[in-house]
Image (cartoon, rainbow over all chains, first blue to last red; front, side, top):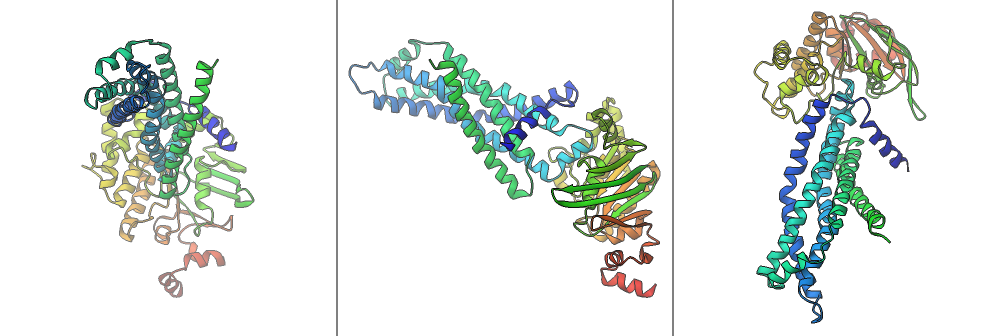
Amino acid sequence: MSKIGQYILFLGALFKNPESFRTYFRLTVDECVYIGLNSITIVAIVSVFMGAVSTVQTAYNLISPLIPDSVIGLVVRDLTILELAPTITAIVFAGKVGSSIAGNLGTMRITEQIDALEVMGINSASYLVLPKVIATIFMYPFLVILAGVLAIGGGYLAAEFAGALAPADYLSGLQSSFNEFGVFFALIKSVVFGFLISSISAYMGYYTKGGALEVGQSSTKAVTVSCIAILLSDFILAQLMLGS
Amino acid sequence: MIELKNVSKSFGDKQVLNGIDATFEKGKTNLIIGASGSGKSVLLKNIVGLFKPDEGEILYDNRNLVTADRDLKTDIRREIGMLFQGGALFDSMNVEQNVKFPLDVLTKMPEDEKLDRVNEVLARVKLENTNTKMPSEISGGMQKRVGIARAIVNNSKYLFCDEPNSGLDPRTSIKIDQLLAEITEEYQITTVIVTHDMNSVMEIGEYIIFICNTRKLWEGNNEGIAHSGIEELDDFVFANKMMRKFRGMV
């Protein structure tokens, strides 16, 4: 419980004694490039395969002659929008960006770089962490949109080249019974997941004590706790927004 | 001038500092010495505000850092420069960006003036033409000098150094000590150095306090340190063979 309290105080500290808007803007743009653009490759690779595998496995399970093949496209689309794109990408994102944030801040802590900022009268939590949190909240929804598009594209590739189903059936399924609320729900989830990944990872790194070993442990903890928080919040959001 | 009045600090049940009094004057190199684990680095962290003392006052030209509100604390801290044990240079920035950092964040100086100031302090610490080098590309001694340049670039009134000679060879250590002493006198800074290096003590110790077992046991200068008559201080000062030989000669 004390850790949760410390985490909440840490979040409060992000907004105390801030630097100029210009400083934050510059840092946030840098972080958007580092966190967002540098994650495109891994997100793209994971998404294409995620969509392709979902299509092949759904086709494997829907073998009833009473169910048209176009349902496979519909299932893959909804699965991708509601769960795969925001949540599985979040797990991958936590592994890549979360560990990097924790490692970076942990190293700054043990090499006294954070103390150096504090001695200069700079709120180190706000200066170092707030741009990362804002950049993640801003960039992660774009990555989710990209992941969704590429996963659906990956499903099409599986239909076209792996023969899981006829591409025309897949495309027909994609267009049937589309509910726009699913996209809105995915974007809400992406904002929440982005906030959780960046803030939890930053918290783990910022409070690192010790040496190189502890920096590694902080990175591992950042990924583990972020993943648990993602899954827990995923359930809570689903219950709140989709539950009866 | 910085005055410490009855500064005490403990962590849980463990008392680390007990009623420390000292006065660090402007334009002097003030040293805090003591064995490893004696609490001198904790004292320094209390002085710069990284820790809050349980009791006592820390006065920066009569402004008490301990009871200061956030704005005053920020004002005082912005007059402080600090050289950390490992340099604490920002890994992602080159030498110029590291030195310019306090100016970028704490001032509204035009960019060309900032660069002029950066080049001026880099020249002062004899590091011309290193602007584009990354911290990992320069030696430990150079990193310390970049740290000093960063600490003084914003015309700091107070300079703190935590073990400035750690990890350096004796010759480089003396150069760093001399540089700190010169800068202190030239810019009339109040400099406080934490060290356990006796070479530094003998070279630049204008005012020295000796911390042992949580208390200040002695204060004086480098001329009087060999004649204190305090057993703990003698054990610290004459710990190595050469100093014992020197003591025999005296």
